[in-house]
Length: 80
Length: 448
Image 1: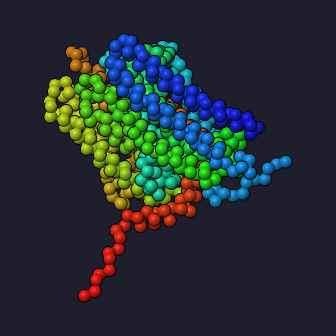
Image 2: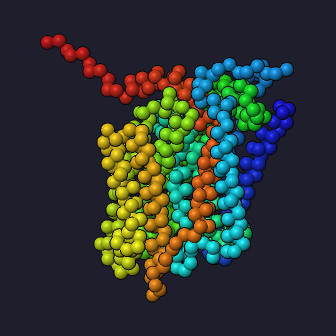
Image 3: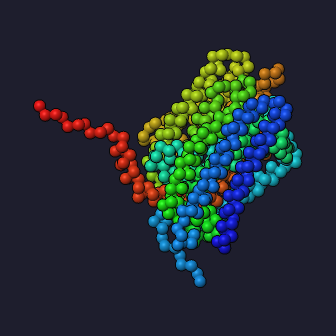
């Protein structure tokens, strides 16, 4: 397979991971909004989201760090 | 022009199942696919006719599916948690074990996570969680924590696999595009190794609390209710201990199977089984301690509703399961693993299978008796799982076996680069580590 295409697919996969985790964060925020609207234990919802959202973003950040780091760490003279 | 075959790799035994899978692989896959297809048909039938095709009815509204959910998620603790602990503690003997363990987590979590959906008569209503979920419900904590654990475990499995994927890419193993796509341009430079090490260090720290939180939260589904037999403050750690216990047993069974099938005797040595079986024995004792504490406090309180559930387990309809559980989880492992003569690979296999059966029975004993003995003046419930539930259980196990086989078909089940790194650097690293914590030599005695 064309190496440029693989390159693009790799970038796409990382972007999709960010999209997924952002989607999860938006979902959690939406549930907090609902709990605030219904006065349905918003403090509990806030507490849980404070833990959950950073976990997902830490994971996507680690993946991105590895992705970028491995690209930067390649030898210039050798094709991957 | 045909590409020349790759030169034999120093760790060829680890790559052989990928480069030459053999015919038996395809036969087993075919059999498993037939079972899975039939399971799919049975599930569609359940969706069509409703949960009436299961053995669940009032008051026992949770059965096999929830039991298997808790059981599979428990097994998932085998991998990432144990692997992270072994990596963090720099246990050198971990090298041939960690990946096998991590794969269990990723596959089993996917299967276990689907069980609450199977338990729904109207699975389409799962979508309600996305816009009407209540974040203070333990069920929603479960979804969040399982998703986080699944993601973290997959990332934790994938990142240390990158150098091995690059080995397969460089050897021209097919499908080459897959290995090229997944290897992320790995060339093994010093800079790339630094990045990988740093990422692994972060993940090790992140993944341990996530893993512990998952099974604690699963226990909350039960403990947050005021149901007799469930409402317990020690349920969190009790579930975590049980999960690690069943997880270690699952790793041991898989190690023994792969050692035999893939001829990995050079990598999985008796010492690995010995260390892990001692850990299994310790977990067996811990499990017994928690079980004893759990039932003793219930018995001492002598609350009538609690006692109904208690006697239902100890001498009632569930007594055979209860005492089999005690035998499988405590007596048999204790007898087999505390004696050096029986702590052999066959002995460890028997003890591990016994623990897996015992831990499944434990989940059964936790879920059903509390529901079968309602506090309202209703008769005691009866739960007999139907053929549908048994089929879905067998289907779940088949998906696990198929998933593991597919993984082993495309990726090494033992980390090649970590073995090579161990051969080159372990002795020096361990010697330096020992030198760093050994007490300094005493100063020379003054003369006279």
